[in-house]
Image (tube, each protein chain N blue to C red):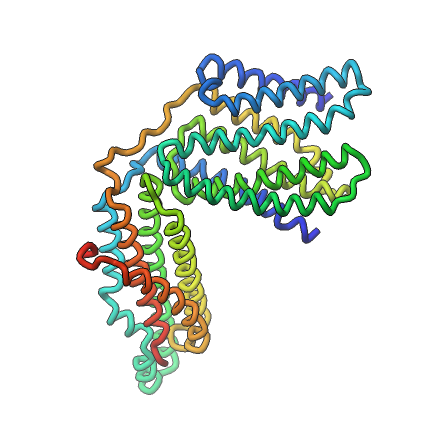
Length: 255
Length: 182
């Protein structure tokens, strides 16, 4: 009963996000995010109908559709990255390099993990692949969040909502996936039970923050911001060097 | 179970950074995000004041005063003196850390708006900043544990790390156009 309620609530929230997005123009503004929500909605509907009317098909269809939504969720990362760095070509290049390194490292890790696995069934193999894709996604998301926080990238309210909801979902999902391999663990059982609820919370965050279209922050005028990056960088370096030097001299004081 | 730790840690970090982003964005909506040249100059001046008093700061760590107090005063006064010096040393170090952090924050805000930041420079800068913070926190711990006069041996150990850090800076500073810095 509760499972069905969560299922229907999820479908209702996803539909609301898409319908509201169509009304406010956010559907066209964030096409990749909308495509992801559409993909999840399609998966939910397929799951619901097969569960109700063709239960034999439910299990064979579950893992492929799950994998499709995990792959589709990469579109959200691309969407966030695209919008967050649209006024900053330099930072975009920096972020691209960092993200590429993180992506290669995590793909290598996940690839080695996948190649060493022994799979009893196709469902198991898809589940393992899905888990590894989540690892890659988490590595990329973590690097991206770190860049946003570190460089204090100004983000619009819609984008913030998208990022927060997505981070919440991926963070909870990752912890859950990690404990998946510990089926007897009491915490694992609890997390599995809570996962649909965390997805509902994520959808609620997206629904609230994307209900209205908010304006994107305007970059400050040229006169107010730094004009000579090199000069300021050198100044910062010089002050840091001086701070280190004083620190070093103080540590060399003889007793 | 131990293998799960990094994954759980990444998951937890994502949640924490997501929360931090919310707090950061709600804070920045109230204040202007841009940085002016004046703001940077003020931060630099604030840091300069920390170093202008370098003679007085050296005195905090100097053992002569302690020797004098040890010879001429009762144990209670020695204890009080040590306590005050320790508090002063820690206060100075915390102030320096705060000023450097403020300067770095301004630099990062500027970098976010710069059209062409250098990825190599930014990564180097980040590494150097973390190295500085690491050394200064290590020193803080030493001051807290052993006081300003008795930490020499352990402090010497950190000199190697700090020395390397300073060498990197010195090499970079050789290419600085001096008149542009003034």
